[in-house]
Length: 450
Ligand SMILES: N=C(N)NCCC[C@H](NC(=O)CCC(=O)O)C(=O)O
Image (cartoon, rainbow, N blue to C red):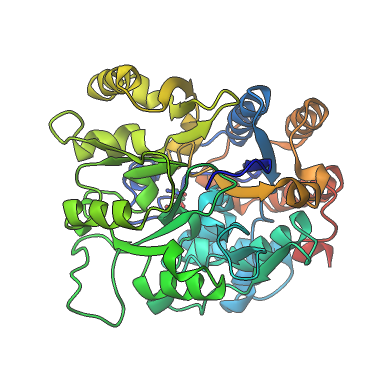
């Protein structure tokens, strides 16, 4: 099965936007709620993200940059009945509904694992790469993202001979879709046909499927099925599994908080899936590769669900290095958690392809429930497809330097709730993003530029 055609997994990381703040908007996401009143540092957040991107680039991996969205989204406030010019609207919202003001300021598009679901050309009937932006219907602040996400994806992947972009699913809870955070691809190597595993939290139509009782299930079975249909994924390359509803109720709001896959490795917690033994057997049975599939199941006795949620062990990235070995790209919180760091040590010495770990300080994002894997959208590409990507969105030493200068010039180092009423913040944000679209050659992707 293994072919020699070169192929790449490119990680497109969300560049943290200038209005990154803590607003407590994501019920079911423990970190978001715990830090609802914290003061953020957008500059540090952006620099932490860029440091990770640069480190990945320096390791020889292909790294891309996903631009932030324009915030505040004043049009959303207009749609909700606020009138006047931008400044008047922001003032009125600050007085009448501070919570709505927070939602339209959220920089949540930084978590690009939720931007879209991507199916590589090796998996699709027409042999094109398919993208469907996620509707992120479960949270109002995130439901503002899909249209701009699609504009950005089209500017990043402009060649319709290689890339197909689908409209996000209906904006309705029955089709709640959170993108690649609930989607893993298993294969011998990125240039082989993969098994696309879609993980859902609940079903909208089938009430015999028991969902969580405390926190919401953000991804529905019906949404996953629709995305697989849109992408025309070959039948033998798709699997739908249910996430364990009990762990959703303990703060595992996306599957990538409890499992991560890369090529022929699936690292997951013992409680990740419903009927775990049967779910894992379905994966083994459907796996198309010839190499051994490594399913590394982390026992509760070694890492509790609570430790998994607080350390974000499973929100690590798992990447294949040039020598074929795999590296865990983990948040620093894993190093500081005794049971998690002990587990990582033992996993690295066990016989499996993962034999290295690198820890990153992503605290600004982590405090909103976003770890290393939340910050990136994986796109597996052939060489021809890679050559068709807008080259200006790819990381390089020069691009890194330009982005650091840009962040230093435009970003504040402190943002609290009180700052959101300041219309100057909107102005600063627009000036910064207008300049960014030139650095990344994106064209007029934002509403304020049209
Ligand atoms: N697991 C993945 N792939 N992504 C993490 C997304 C975190 C995001 N947090 C937020 O949206 C918090 C915003 C706030 O409270 O200010 C969310 O809950 O959707």
